[in-house]
Image (cartoon, rainbow, N blue to C red; front, side):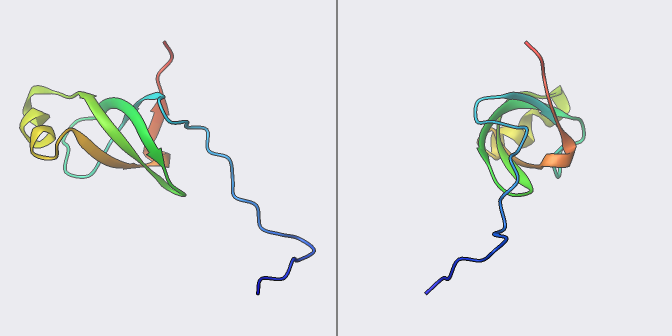
Amino acid sequence: MDLPTKNPIKQEESEFKVGDMVRCTAEEFIYPIRGYVERVYNHSAVIRIENTMDCDKELAKSKANIAVARLVDMEVMKA
């Protein structure tokens, strides 16, 4: 049984929301990638890749255009 505490730990609100277009660096990719946020976790997010450099296109295709990026390595792109 989980008892209430005086100071419950609250999860931080992330500045990234599902559907945001972001520019980020991800593991194994040489250049930054651009894509949309699919899911946000505590310290990372799943990105659906929209655009990469030509040398990274084959890697993106092999990963089904999905990448995981750290939140500190991401920035929201303004429309």
